[in-house]
Image 1 (cartoon, one colour):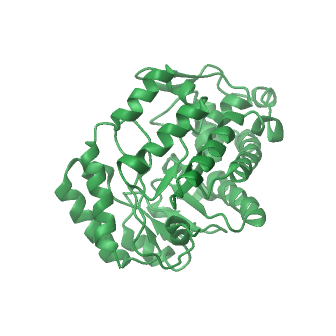
Image 2 (cartoon, rainbow, N blue to C red):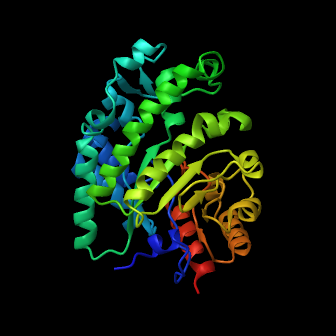
Amino acid sequence: MSKIFVDACFGKPTPYTPVWMMRQAGRYLPEYMKVRAEAGNFLNLCHDPEKAAEVTLQPLDIVGVDAAILFSDILVIPDEMGMDLSFVKGEGPKFSDPITSQEDLDRLIGGEEAADKLTYVYDTIKLLRKQLDERGDEKALIGFTGAPWTLATYMIEGQGTKTYNICKKMLYSNPELLHNILAKVTEVVKLYMEKQIQSGVDVVQIFDSWASAIEPGKYDEFSWKYMVEIAEYLKEKYPHIPIIMFPKGVASFIERGLVYGNFDVFGVDWSTPMAMAKKYLGDKYVLQGNMEPCRLYSKEATTTCVEVIQETMGGERHIFNLGHGILPDVPVENAIHFVKECQRVSKK
């Protein structure tokens, strides 16, 4: 059975432009908050395949999106490599043992050994595959990972950061150590994504949430080339699986010709003009995005933006999405409105 979302990823004609939202399985949904409360905390929810599968499917039924994205977290990778992860209420994720030296890196497990520990993620995917197939659902299932650079920033800083000064200090003063960290993480990510594909995802997305922290002249060396390496590894083995790359805040990189590689879809963040992304990348990649997530607070602002994006893309080689994640206080009815508007304006 051909899935509209998968066809769109490969640039094939579809009856309308498919739509999904980053962070669509999340806190804006009362149904999600109920399951999360039952789980006890965020990490428990990630580790419980039944509950993780339930919240993954919620946006399909409630909001009407065309693809489900696996409910998990990018930081399960360093957690299973042996770092001590906790989620502090009101503060977000924290590692009590950030990497400061080669010795710190050497104590972490890597490769197949680390990827094999993420069984709860693969079990969630297998459960979702079964449930989607039983529904006779044409909705696609997206697997994902954080990019090595984004994962490394957390592993080095020990938490989220606004300045990235600790990892950027390493970038300039000890690049060899940073490359060692990135290489080790990349090997785990390759196998992690491969196991997600073997478990049943239809598409994979690589998120580089902190791409804009790196100056354009250094971006390829410390982030993009590692993402391309992962994509190349997966494409060689699984050419039928579309790959989406989403580096956030990279308008200047696009203009400088720094986007290349063997993947299918380029996720355009909201700070990058869609017309510019189309000009530089539209012939080579399908484009995904890129409504400013805060427009969801207004149905009128949403409709205006959806119509402009549709006009720019012409309903071809495009997937509707937000230019980053949906925010927790967005009314559910506004999210539904966004999805319906995307389908309305692009219906052929």
